[in-house]
Amino acid sequence: MQLSLILSALIEPLKLEIERLLLDREFFCVPVIRWLQALEIPFEIPAIIKGKNGGTRQLIRGRRSYKTSYTLNSDQYGSVTFIVGIVCIYKKGKRRSHGREFFVYAIYKVKLSLHSIHDDYRLRFGIESSYRMKNQCRIKTTIKNPTIRFLFVALAFLIINIWIYLLWHYLRTLKRSSKKAFSYLFTLKQMLEFLRQTIDRNYGIVNEVCFT
Image (cartoon, rainbow, N blue to C red; front, side, top):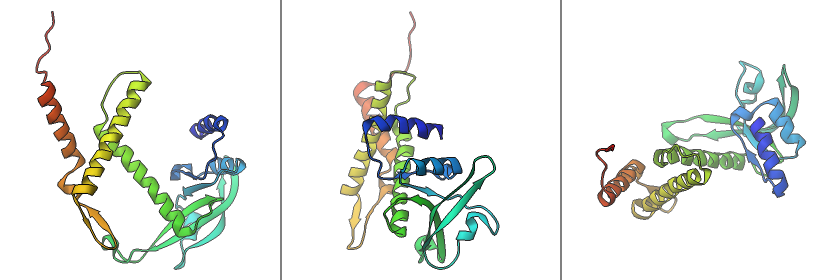
């Protein structure tokens, strides 16, 4: 919550218009939702499913997606009412699974269909995956200079994008309905190892440190 307030204070002077916020389920709480509604900021937040018969679990029913209003209560912060979108997805054998799967989102002023909201939020997982991958190739340093540290992060993302480019241009198959990259043939770890070997060959390896 405090971080959200800080970011809002930084964005406000820039006069940027927020189309919608896609937040973690940890932000599914009364003060955050109430604060976003007060600021008229559109948002999508996955609901925390809890309760045996009541709570948000009671929303998981039926065979179709639907919208309804829901009131979230808190002993400390009171209550807040908002719209929730319940998205019903049929697995249809994907990942060898069948049956229905439900996703519940707290939404506010989002002009998308329910299934579009679900697809829209799934794009966020791609961003999180990129950040996790970034940690595999980010240069470790104790330098406190923010410019240098940001440069190392930018280089990490550049390496990831080069790897993705190589996959989709040289290790892929195309079909009418879809395309697939064979990432197991050339993993990010392999590319990093190739880069390390090239650096070692061009700049040499330090095997000892001499003190005078």
